[in-house]
Image 1 (cartoon, rainbow, N blue to C red):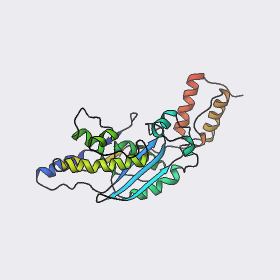
Image 2: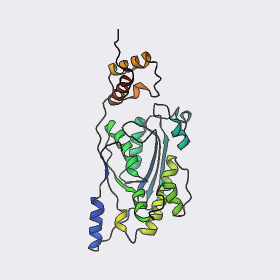
Image 3: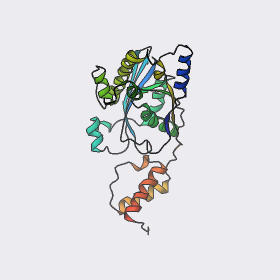
Image 4: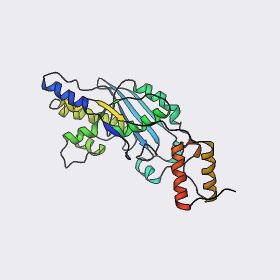
Length: 265
């Protein structure tokens, strides 16, 4: 994730293995929030969430769903629309993440998060929570890690391929709610086939992602960027008023690096 400190803590799993060695029964998690996000890219520092899909599962049964589109305040690249089927028109009247996030965190409650490479989804949500002054500390269950452990090496571990390997029909590929449902169903199949032989692999562990709160851009930063864009006749695909101080600095530095500095009269 672009050099940021992203890791899944293994201490709980080691402790679980030790418990097994001494004959202590390991409880396989069967209550969780199955989660998937669609985003404008892969870097939580620069990219934005455009769709959240989540399924609350308690004792193995679905008890609730959460789904929303989100306005990223920037144009979508063609590759994102091609991958997800999500177009800019679909996001035109979508809510802002800042308005939706508290409701979503309430939906999650104290349950661990589950997903296919769950640290990716957690990193975007954790950054957003920190920027809003909200607490978001979670344990996670990663179906990708489980697939890497239990599937044959030559088999693809992508979500769709893993579902097919275990005889599951995929819901709606590369859409948030469909992928969340697929991750839930895949986890249940993985547990059915492998939990008895390796219960320690299914123990949820803390999700760790270090992030500092971003500072809002200053009025002068916005004015300077708008001047550069107008001077060089650049059409910026993002809305300046929604950029952080660091984001504006990066964009400004790139423009100056390409075109050189100018003096304002």
